[in-house]
Image (cartoon, rainbow, N blue to C red; front, top):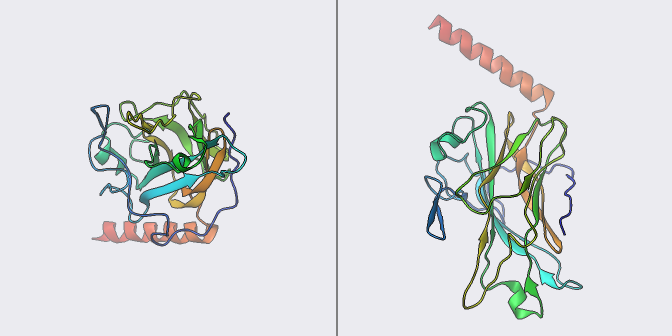
Length: 240
Protein backbone atom coordinates (compact mmCIF):
# COMPACT_ATOMS: atom_id res chain seq x y z
CA UNK A 1 0.00 0.00 0.00
CA UNK A 2 1.24 3.50 -0.77
CA UNK A 3 2.19 5.79 2.08
CA UNK A 4 2.80 9.53 2.17
CA UNK A 5 6.16 11.10 2.72
CA UNK A 6 6.41 13.98 5.11
CA UNK A 7 9.40 16.24 4.71
CA UNK A 8 11.92 16.34 7.52
CA UNK A 9 14.22 19.14 8.65
CA UNK A 10 16.76 20.06 6.04
CA UNK A 11 20.28 18.75 6.38
CA UNK A 12 23.46 20.69 5.71
CA UNK A 13 24.01 21.37 2.03
CA UNK A 14 26.33 18.86 0.37
CA UNK A 15 29.79 20.20 -0.52
CA UNK A 16 30.88 17.13 -2.45
CA UNK A 17 30.05 13.47 -2.73
CA UNK A 18 28.96 11.52 0.34
CA UNK A 19 29.33 7.86 1.17
CA UNK A 20 26.10 7.03 -0.60
CA UNK A 21 26.14 9.75 -3.25
CA UNK A 22 28.42 9.05 -6.21
CA UNK A 23 28.53 10.58 -9.63
CA UNK A 24 25.39 9.43 -11.51
CA UNK A 25 21.98 10.27 -13.32
CA UNK A 26 20.26 8.69 -16.36
CA UNK A 27 19.70 9.94 -19.91
CA UNK A 28 20.41 6.98 -22.19
CA UNK A 29 19.00 3.69 -20.97
CA UNK A 30 17.72 0.66 -22.79
CA UNK A 31 14.67 -1.07 -21.40
CA UNK A 32 13.05 -3.71 -23.55
CA UNK A 33 15.04 -2.34 -26.50
CA UNK A 34 13.62 1.18 -26.12
CA UNK A 35 16.14 4.03 -26.00
CA UNK A 36 15.67 6.19 -22.92
CA UNK A 37 16.66 9.81 -23.34
CA UNK A 38 19.44 11.31 -25.44
CA UNK A 39 22.79 11.43 -23.64
CA UNK A 40 24.57 9.94 -20.67
CA UNK A 41 23.09 8.16 -17.68
CA UNK A 42 21.49 10.46 -15.11
CA UNK A 43 24.22 9.34 -12.74
CA UNK A 44 27.04 10.47 -15.02
CA UNK A 45 25.41 13.17 -17.15
CA UNK A 46 28.08 15.77 -18.05
CA UNK A 47 25.34 18.40 -18.22
CA UNK A 48 24.53 17.86 -14.53
CA UNK A 49 25.61 20.32 -11.85
CA UNK A 50 29.00 19.53 -10.25
CA UNK A 51 28.73 16.65 -7.76
CA UNK A 52 24.94 16.82 -7.56
CA UNK A 53 24.45 13.61 -9.51
CA UNK A 54 24.79 10.03 -8.43
CA UNK A 55 23.01 6.98 -7.09
CA UNK A 56 21.72 5.89 -3.69
CA UNK A 57 20.31 2.58 -2.50
CA UNK A 58 17.14 2.66 -0.39
CA UNK A 59 16.22 -0.39 1.68
CA UNK A 60 13.43 -1.13 4.13
CA UNK A 61 13.36 -3.14 7.36
CA UNK A 62 13.18 -6.93 7.05
CA UNK A 63 11.68 -8.31 10.30
CA UNK A 64 7.91 -8.61 10.34
CA UNK A 65 7.37 -8.09 6.60
CA UNK A 66 6.61 -10.54 3.81
CA UNK A 67 8.47 -8.46 1.21
CA UNK A 68 11.85 -6.74 1.24
CA UNK A 69 12.34 -3.27 -0.27
CA UNK A 70 15.68 -2.61 -1.99
CA UNK A 71 15.94 -0.15 -4.89
CA UNK A 72 18.56 2.05 -6.51
CA UNK A 73 17.70 5.67 -7.34
CA UNK A 74 19.75 7.64 -9.83
CA UNK A 75 19.52 11.42 -9.65
CA UNK A 76 20.82 14.58 -11.29
CA UNK A 77 20.44 18.29 -10.64
CA UNK A 78 20.61 20.64 -13.62
CA UNK A 79 21.40 24.34 -13.52
CA UNK A 80 19.00 26.61 -15.42
CA UNK A 81 19.23 25.89 -19.14
CA UNK A 82 21.22 22.63 -18.84
CA UNK A 83 18.36 20.11 -18.73
CA UNK A 84 17.47 20.84 -22.36
CA UNK A 85 20.99 19.82 -23.44
CA UNK A 86 20.25 16.27 -22.31
CA UNK A 87 16.49 16.24 -22.87
CA UNK A 88 15.64 18.72 -25.66
CA UNK A 89 12.18 20.21 -25.36
CA UNK A 90 11.47 18.67 -21.95
CA UNK A 91 12.18 21.60 -19.60
CA UNK A 92 8.79 23.04 -18.57
CA UNK A 93 10.47 26.19 -17.23
CA UNK A 94 12.04 26.99 -20.60
CA UNK A 95 15.50 27.08 -19.02
CA UNK A 96 14.55 29.53 -16.27
CA UNK A 97 14.69 27.11 -13.31
CA UNK A 98 16.84 24.38 -11.80
CA UNK A 99 15.65 20.86 -12.67
CA UNK A 100 15.70 17.96 -10.19
CA UNK A 101 15.57 14.55 -11.92
CA UNK A 102 15.31 11.02 -10.49
CA UNK A 103 14.89 7.47 -11.78
CA UNK A 104 13.99 4.41 -9.68
CA UNK A 105 15.58 1.03 -10.46
CA UNK A 106 13.78 -1.89 -8.82
CA UNK A 107 16.18 -4.42 -10.37
CA UNK A 108 18.86 -5.23 -7.77
CA UNK A 109 20.26 -8.69 -8.52
CA UNK A 110 20.97 -10.60 -6.39
CA UNK A 111 18.18 -9.08 -4.32
CA UNK A 112 18.46 -9.18 -0.50
CA UNK A 113 15.13 -11.04 -0.35
CA UNK A 114 16.66 -14.04 -2.13
CA UNK A 115 18.59 -15.02 1.01
CA UNK A 116 15.44 -14.76 3.14
CA UNK A 117 11.98 -16.38 3.06
CA UNK A 118 10.57 -13.21 1.49
CA UNK A 119 9.96 -11.70 -1.94
CA UNK A 120 11.32 -8.46 -3.47
CA UNK A 121 9.01 -5.54 -2.72
CA UNK A 122 7.23 -3.47 -5.36
CA UNK A 123 7.38 0.35 -5.50
CA UNK A 124 4.10 2.23 -5.14
CA UNK A 125 5.44 5.73 -4.44
CA UNK A 126 8.57 7.86 -4.34
CA UNK A 127 8.48 11.28 -2.68
CA UNK A 128 11.08 14.00 -2.15
CA UNK A 129 10.90 16.31 0.86
CA UNK A 130 10.39 20.04 0.31
CA UNK A 131 10.05 23.12 2.47
CA UNK A 132 6.89 25.12 1.90
CA UNK A 133 8.75 28.20 0.60
CA UNK A 134 10.85 26.57 -2.14
CA UNK A 135 8.33 27.08 -4.95
CA UNK A 136 8.84 23.65 -6.51
CA UNK A 137 6.78 23.34 -9.69
CA UNK A 138 5.32 20.33 -11.47
CA UNK A 139 5.81 16.60 -10.94
CA UNK A 140 6.72 15.44 -14.40
CA UNK A 141 7.51 12.03 -15.92
CA UNK A 142 9.23 11.65 -19.27
CA UNK A 143 7.51 9.28 -21.67
CA UNK A 144 9.72 6.66 -23.30
CA UNK A 145 12.26 6.49 -20.48
CA UNK A 146 10.65 3.76 -18.35
CA UNK A 147 7.46 2.92 -16.44
CA UNK A 148 5.20 5.94 -16.18
CA UNK A 149 3.55 6.81 -12.84
CA UNK A 150 -0.23 6.91 -12.83
CA UNK A 151 -0.63 9.72 -10.28
CA UNK A 152 2.05 12.43 -10.07
CA UNK A 153 1.54 14.99 -7.32
CA UNK A 154 0.09 18.37 -8.22
CA UNK A 155 2.44 20.86 -6.55
CA UNK A 156 1.31 24.07 -4.90
CA UNK A 157 3.65 26.89 -3.80
CA UNK A 158 3.44 25.56 -0.23
CA UNK A 159 3.87 21.83 -1.00
CA UNK A 160 6.07 19.89 1.44
CA UNK A 161 6.81 16.98 -0.90
CA UNK A 162 7.08 16.13 -4.58
CA UNK A 163 5.87 12.61 -5.32
CA UNK A 164 4.87 10.09 -7.94
CA UNK A 165 2.50 7.14 -7.38
CA UNK A 166 2.59 3.84 -9.28
CA UNK A 167 -0.02 1.10 -9.61
CA UNK A 168 0.73 -1.49 -6.91
CA UNK A 169 2.43 -4.17 -9.03
CA UNK A 170 3.52 -1.88 -11.88
CA UNK A 171 6.97 -1.45 -10.32
CA UNK A 172 7.46 -5.04 -9.09
CA UNK A 173 10.81 -6.82 -9.50
CA UNK A 174 10.85 -10.52 -10.35
CA UNK A 175 14.43 -11.88 -10.27
CA UNK A 176 15.30 -15.41 -11.32
CA UNK A 177 15.87 -17.28 -14.60
CA UNK A 178 13.51 -14.91 -16.43
CA UNK A 179 14.06 -11.57 -14.66
CA UNK A 180 11.53 -8.77 -15.07
CA UNK A 181 13.18 -5.54 -13.91
CA UNK A 182 11.07 -2.52 -13.08
CA UNK A 183 12.60 0.83 -14.04
CA UNK A 184 10.67 4.06 -13.69
CA UNK A 185 10.51 6.88 -16.18
CA UNK A 186 12.73 9.88 -15.51
CA UNK A 187 10.82 11.82 -12.82
CA UNK A 188 11.47 15.52 -12.32
CA UNK A 189 10.33 18.90 -11.04
CA UNK A 190 11.70 22.45 -11.23
CA UNK A 191 12.51 25.20 -8.74
CA UNK A 192 14.11 28.66 -8.87
CA UNK A 193 16.58 27.49 -6.21
CA UNK A 194 19.73 25.39 -6.17
CA UNK A 195 20.23 22.12 -4.24
CA UNK A 196 20.79 20.69 -0.80
CA UNK A 197 20.07 17.21 0.58
CA UNK A 198 16.61 16.40 1.92
CA UNK A 199 14.58 13.35 2.89
CA UNK A 200 13.17 10.88 0.39
CA UNK A 201 10.78 7.99 0.97
CA UNK A 202 10.14 4.99 -1.27
CA UNK A 203 7.00 3.03 -0.41
CA UNK A 204 5.64 -0.38 -1.31
CA UNK A 205 4.54 -3.05 1.14
CA UNK A 206 6.94 -1.27 3.46
CA UNK A 207 8.73 2.11 3.35
CA UNK A 208 12.43 2.88 2.97
CA UNK A 209 14.12 6.24 3.52
CA UNK A 210 17.19 8.07 2.24
CA UNK A 211 18.38 11.51 1.14
CA UNK A 212 18.29 13.07 -2.31
CA UNK A 213 18.83 16.59 -3.72
CA UNK A 214 16.01 19.08 -3.17
CA UNK A 215 15.83 22.89 -3.48
CA UNK A 216 17.34 25.17 -0.85
CA UNK A 217 15.85 28.62 -0.33
CA UNK A 218 18.80 31.04 0.11
CA UNK A 219 19.10 32.90 3.41
CA UNK A 220 18.05 36.58 3.10
CA UNK A 221 21.65 37.79 3.49
CA UNK A 222 22.88 35.37 0.82
CA UNK A 223 20.15 36.42 -1.58
CA UNK A 224 21.01 40.09 -0.99
CA UNK A 225 24.72 39.47 -1.71
CA UNK A 226 23.84 37.65 -4.94
CA UNK A 227 21.54 40.50 -6.01
CA UNK A 228 24.21 43.15 -5.31
CA UNK A 229 26.75 41.12 -7.26
CA UNK A 230 24.43 40.81 -10.23
CA UNK A 231 23.74 44.55 -10.21
CA UNK A 232 27.46 45.32 -10.02
CA UNK A 233 28.22 42.95 -12.89
CA UNK A 234 25.48 44.56 -14.97
CA UNK A 235 26.88 48.07 -14.33
CA UNK A 236 30.43 47.01 -15.28
CA UNK A 237 29.13 45.40 -18.43
CA UNK A 238 27.30 48.57 -19.47
CA UNK A 239 30.39 50.71 -18.83
CA UNK A 240 32.48 48.33 -20.91
